[in-house]
Image (cartoon, chains in turn yellow, purple):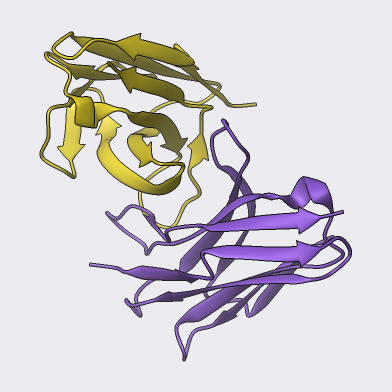
Length: 113
Length: 112
């Protein structure tokens, strides 16, 4: 069966520091991968998605970037965190784009001080 | 692009009552409609989904109905239990190079 892992589960970072969140999927090949941000416990904002290694689509211009160095690895990064980057970051995967379910990890709670 | 509206934003029911959450979508090309349940501190979990060639789907105490003409779909939970308390999200997508568009969520509170 397929599983998705995100780490860390919780992260506290100072303003201006770098960020790296990692997501990996097991049990499937060539998944589509997604990063979402959820603020105030409600609403899912799609940040990035990827249909293959090195292929990243950005939905919202911002202080963050994403990379996919391996088939089942998706990384969310920032060079300098802002206070507004605080939130709950969720990774998800699907078999393909379009009319398919997405399966979510358990998220990373990011607090910026 | 697609727009999904979800109502109500908060729903409080007594244990044993039924709960109904409604969503409308804007793009008639959408043909896939999943529902997710998110418990506190966890990621959303798929609980049921429906495709446009079906009008209703049931899974034990939960059911989803779809009205393609009116472009709305609903989640029905019968005999609610305290463990049903969570935030529920609806979503819509279409075939091809598209992603899921989510509603803003409904916080369901089931009181014992």
